[in-house]
Image (cartoon, rainbow over all chains, first blue to last red; front, top):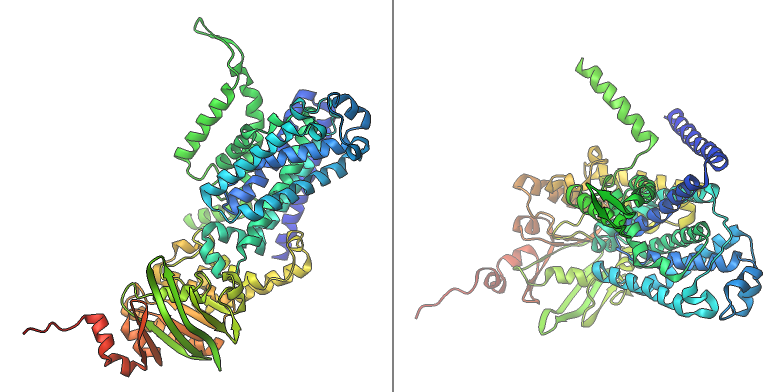
Length: 353
Length: 257
């Protein structure tokens, strides 16, 4: 038994080594366009998994992810931008004092972005998580809109609707994939722990959970704060990847994309979120073609921006109608699962013959 | 020694007085039955004791400590556990996970030590698993431990609910219609089971039940509620011959002039 556990551990280490090797090769040899898509894959995985913790595992339907991303993106950008760059950006209203001179390394700005986002997650979550279902969804949606409008108007901090441009491009595959792996590992360990069981019990039946001594407030806020932390980091990575951020990047549209990833992948399945997160990033690029003008049987169709989302919306409907629980439901893939699947089928074959 | 004292508690929902002036002084080790027609307010009493509802008037003391205004999870951690009239298991989780959630309130390791699988947490996790397995053995569900709880037969679900409640290590156990939907054979088993766990875990039990065989069979003391009022209290013998109780259950004999 112990031997087996060791084998699985080796297998997992091997998998991670292969991914690292892949990142190493990809970062050096692939062209920037492909690397950009791969980066997006990693970021979507971070965002999807963190939202799945709140919506899928704890069962608290939150629509506030874009708000946390905005906070993460702005906080990190304000910290890693050089004072000169800030001066160029804030040509209408200058940036307030301490922020205008600060510059810290990217790593620390990421961590601070996550922590600030988690802090806001706590402040928002503490009063809101008393609400259930639709009410929580509406309040968290309101929160992300408030953040957006606030960032539009706080000219001397966020530069308002002009946004921040020419951000240094720090995000590379090491960052995006490294943090994605960390996020998946962290949240997987969390939900498989005793605390995770308590989170799932709240999703299943909050009245019974409370009667079994699960502190609803603490656990709901816990999942909200962890979700917000990774959302903030995801937003920060996204900001540095696209190199320009403005408040409207983080509209409800952004939350909607992540909701699609989580629901199509399966509420309560990390594996599903990872698969669909990667697929989503790829499809977003592939489907760009439907937005360009094309002629169809001699019929000229002008390019309609937003056609991609139409296709995603239809896909979402199909999934909700035919796979109620998303592609993976609440199943997870792991080496152990694969091993038992293979050995069991072999056993059955043996017994059959 | 008094373990639970409900001191004349009253609860009103709008104009309706669901329970009025309920008084109960429960001694350690007692097994008390709470009976009454449907809608008499029995479950409401449970909900007040466990903190789901706050009484409009009156106080509740547990081991001498006032718990009237405490939150549900706090009261559970003090040592009051319950089961539900309409079973409320965590249906999509496995049987053993259900029981282990009952152990969660004793966890000492912080969240991060659980995420990073520190030895302190792993040890606690092991203890919890052992304890849960022990309890499943107690209710004879150990062979179903990896099954999904929602897939168990009805009677087994009732037992699992009791095991889950026991996992919180209660001193006082509130059972809300444990025999509902069981056949006579299962009911008989349940009666011995309740007596066995009472002895083994040194529990004090309050039992709501419609099955008179169960109530009369194992309860030494019985309280009868009707329209929120306590209409009778006494041992099974007395209750069976109490005219008020007969009236509540069967109605008044029509008198023809």
